[in-house]
Image (cartoon, rainbow, N blue to C red; front, top):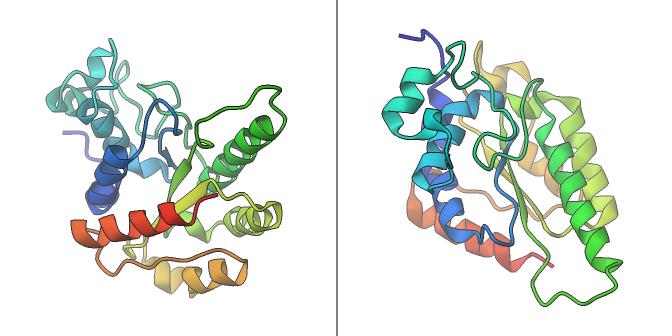
Length: 212
């Protein structure tokens, strides 16, 4: 019907995104940021799955999401902040990690300079990065800055399925992003099959253990 929608990314990242939504505390932690705009159907679907649609009729059901997707008064093709609890709108690729870094650093700063103690842990900031998205140079700049600032409440989750809108990412940019992140000072956890709940659960638990 819509002749668009990039279904590959939402299908590839669903298992991780759903399990992350179950693991995080929405009263403390930041909602998941998605750096790649073509994950919009996943972002909208998660709003409905976790009951965060509020009074937005466009998110009232899976059918409503499909029917209103990319229509004049419906859901936009790229993710927009303010739909449900979505915190970040995507347009040009590569912006999500920088936005998440700013949020994570800001939360650390506020906690450090707060006049009153807060018994809760510093909120976790999660961002989902895709492989086509990771081709942008700004992503690696943000990685290096995060390491320099020692921002340890930020987790970047990579969905590297070697698929993008046109062409194959591994043929466009021949780079080992895990090795690059490690060289920048990051802890890197590689998951062989992101659709295997057991592997995803183990990786999330390991990542959580490195926070703080």
